Length: 453
Image (cartoon, rainbow, N blue to C red):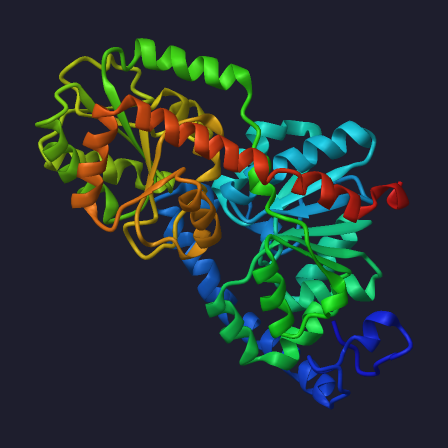
């Protein structure tokens, strides 16, 4: 990111200016701040490892492959890769259409995908298998980053959304690795946070070759924290380019006709702690008006599968799990999806879908996947992470937003009684998705991979 002596003849070095374009003396401060940041990171590394161990008590996958997080690998990988980083499942799903396009256009280019979470890792392996290399993102420590970059020698680095790592960005700049931040978004809260460490934020962002934002609002927010306006383009949100294979839709309908025959399927997707209890109580109330109702729950995190099953049992509701392969008879109240990678399939089998993380202060999850599949969507009021998508869908009458569970109950009964309203929501949502597609192609052209081959 910064060296002791700034070579201001380089275009990127010239960009190391204050947001108003006036030269300042922040660069040395940024260098000092990055060193302090590194020292702090080194000092808390034992706590980070302890946190991994703690999380592994519920999800053993967190206990595996720790060496990758420190830049040590138990095999030799191809070098001169095009490297993509996607934090977890949502970012990985958004990335897959771009990867498919690149593999089609450049079948011989070796690709590397890093993730941070085990669920993201599992999804990458499930969808792409051995066609790409995959490891965990290394911790943002100078020696760790050096080992990672030396192992893979990326020709291009592509980071999704808002993963800004000072040492990693600095190392890519020093090694002349073009670095792209794509599908980038930045909340107002993040803006305030980065402005408190402005010199470090500015020097970090000026190691980036190009920033491709989701919206003009995100573009303005990156400028606010010191990114060079000339290096930013609004190319749209690649999550609108979600792919839904016909086979998934067919399997979903088959699932509805077999597993959930004659049931009205209320799917609660990507739920968090505190939401399942609300939804189970919601189910009990709605069941009085919709006797053939069944609640299908897909918890956001796999380590919570057993907890949700316990909560359903305490609520005195009969439940079965996906992995149990038990018959889902008329007496079953709750069907628990305790698998990964099947959410599209269950969206396709549902009559209505509530997307979680929106009744608790998480900020909401991807609404575009159920929109593309074709299911009426309900969402809560906590949607700060997806506010602009919610705004688009609301303005097109393509989603129903509920302030609380009581309102959710009313809306589900309305949807049950009004098939034409369900059809209208589905049609409007698909139209919104179609009207906003194309970001994948635009980002592909931005990367200019022909120059890397």
